[in-house]
Amino acid sequence: MLLFVKGKFGGAYIMTVTQEYDRRVAAGELHDDPNQRPVLKLLEELHRELADYKPSKLGHLKAFFSGNRRAPKGLYIYGGVGRGKSMLMDLFYSQATTQKKRRVHFHAFMQEIHDALHITRKSGVEDALKPVAVKITHELDLLCFDEMQITDITDAMIVGRLFEYLFNAGVVIVTTSNRHPDDLYKSGLNRSIFLPFIEKIKARLSVHCLDSITDHRQNRLMDQQLYFAPLNDTSRTAMDQLWRELSSGAVAPLIIRRKGRDIIIPEFSNGVGKARFSDLCAKALGPGDYLEIAKSVRVLMLTDVPTLGKANNNEAKRFVILIDALYEAGVKLIASADAEPEALYTDGAGVFEFERTASRLREMQSADWAS
Image 1 (cartoon, helix red, strand yellow):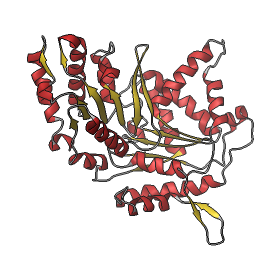
Image 2 (image 1 turned 30 degrees about the horizontal axis):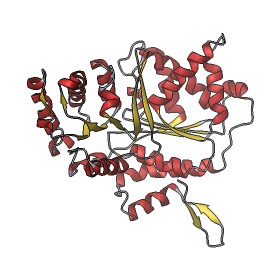
Image 3 (image 1 turned 45 degrees about the horizontal axis):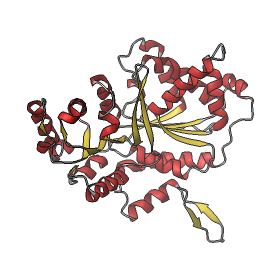
Image 4 (image 1 turned 135 degrees about the vertical axis):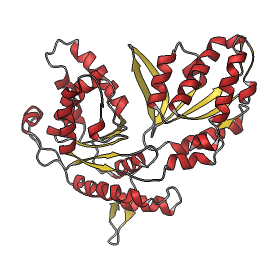
């Protein structure tokens, strides 16, 4: 959201990144964190540079090889979970005046690239990545990524060349990550091929650690009820309120590609996923799929968990596997259900095994688990 403030000469100007941060603090929407201020200063400087920035009018193919010397240096913000990286980037994005901009989760962006490459290869083009990159550079001057991480050899092979195209065409990149660039794709297969990309990241983006002792997301959950039963208007309202508090910026589906299939979290923002029980447990997903989900979200909001038993035994088995995956990965779970954990599954072949699941659901609601 762009905020316009009346100037003293009757004109209008767009609120700066710092002014918008201060406004939200004053309104009680944010807690002022001194550790966020250095990142805020860097974003403010980039905000000013972008105000009058237009990429070179060189042809894009020429720009790929000559580089765009006028492009402002982008920013790579890394640090622990819940420190406010995504919030600060979203705040910067909302105030950026360029119309050719996009904010996207890195995992979702790479899935789009894979899909575009698949389509382009059907045309018989020799280098499928080049037309895909050209299209992006025509559409964007500013690209903001949330949660850059490289865990897949295929992504590692693509991302270096793709970013070289983007950088040379003058696309400014701002990204968040939990890892320093030197730790991207750490211990990955054929990592030596990936190392030049890391050096390019450090050359073209200012790297800054958001080193705060405060986990703002954790603090929001410490005193919150995290399990709501039964399913009614009260529980739905509570879940909706928590979703509004935890999500920020753009909300979009998170699509996880695994073995040629798409695992879809219908709503995803700021590391928080939101899905119905039927989205994740009424479909033919297996242990590996649930492990991928647990790796992809920091918090999962799971709504509309029904009473389980003989009539939906397969769904109950998947729910048990999902909870195990979230528990082992330390993912925070917020759920709305038909009954309290101990009363969710009382009639069926898996009743005995479900006692452990009920116990884990209880533990995952505790203050110790939230911390």
